[in-house]
Length: 71
Image (cartoon, rainbow, N blue to C red; front, side, top):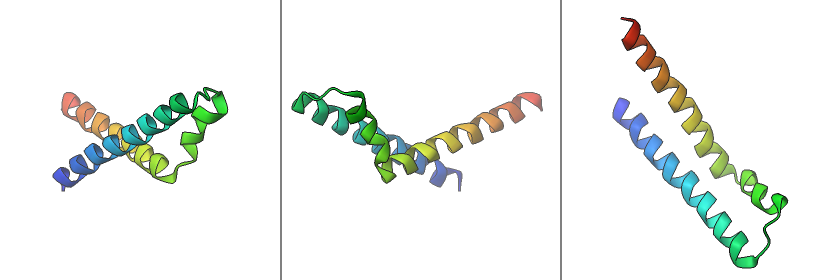
């Protein structure tokens, strides 16, 4: 089960990084560097889902690490 969570984490990082990079590339290519254009990436549901998983997974791993150090 832990391997599945790790694989999902890697995929989430790849997906969110790819979406962010493609969005920034398009903004630079179109020469429209405005704050509203950059923040439009947050409207992508796949980006939000991947980012949410990254956040939850990171907190989970930190909790496991803290538990190991206390034991």
